[in-house]
Amino acid sequence: AFFLPKELPLKGKKVVITAGPTRERIDPVRFLTNFSSGKMGYALAEAAVRLGAETILVSGPVSLPIPLGVKIDNVESAEEMLQAVLAHFDNADIVIKTAAVADYRPKVIHAQKMKKQLGDSTLELERTIDILMTLGQKKSHQLVIGFAAETNNVEAYAQEKLMKKNADYIIANDVTRADSGFGTDTNTVVVIGKENYMKHFDNMTKKELAIQLFQTILAHEKELQH
Ligand code: CTP
Ligand code: CA
Image (cartoon, rainbow, N blue to C red):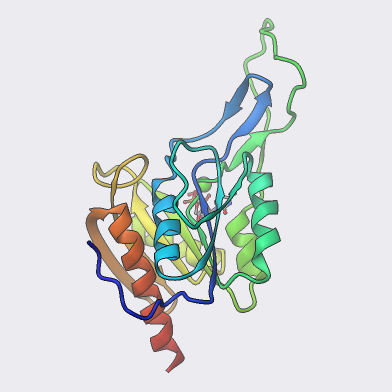
């Protein structure tokens, strides 16, 4: 259904994609997470394979079939996702951080189920490591691409994340839109890059968007080299 070029543009390239939520344990029966379905990341992994890449999908807990040809690396927490991504980073060509990584985790993971206690109503949290920012600081030849989930000021916040995390591109979506964000099959995004690069993609399936995102970014990168 989609237009595919005869020459596979990602042939010989290694693409690492993270997808889904992370899960931060509180005790053996409870955890903190978010509404990420993993659909955009899985669509990107499928697209990367179709465009010829060796594709590694570092996935948080989701209920989606693994796209054919993708190497899956299942993780649970933000820390496990960080370690998995770092293990693949040195010989990766493109890393796309689609995952909705938890920003906080419980300071202690209780070994036993926590019991209700009089006056106990707070859970102590600590920040997780920012994986995308870690990659932005570490990168040499890699193209580092992040996502941004926003509810307002989408372009301004995405621009801020691009700079702060030293990413090459940020793909931002407005998670309040009905056709966009968590759980939907469609997405509306804006791609932000350095030197005020900006391109909008309006209400298309995540599968079609995935192919177009690769084609657009690869074309822009080629342009930058000339
Ligand atoms: N991200 C990450 N590690 C984290 C948090 C976020 O790698 N601990 C990545 C996400 O995978 C995404 C990008 O950073 O590619 C932006 O995530 P988002 O939640 O939109 O932004 P944050 O930087 O966490 O800022 P905030 O949630 O405060 O808007
Ligand atoms: Ca966040």
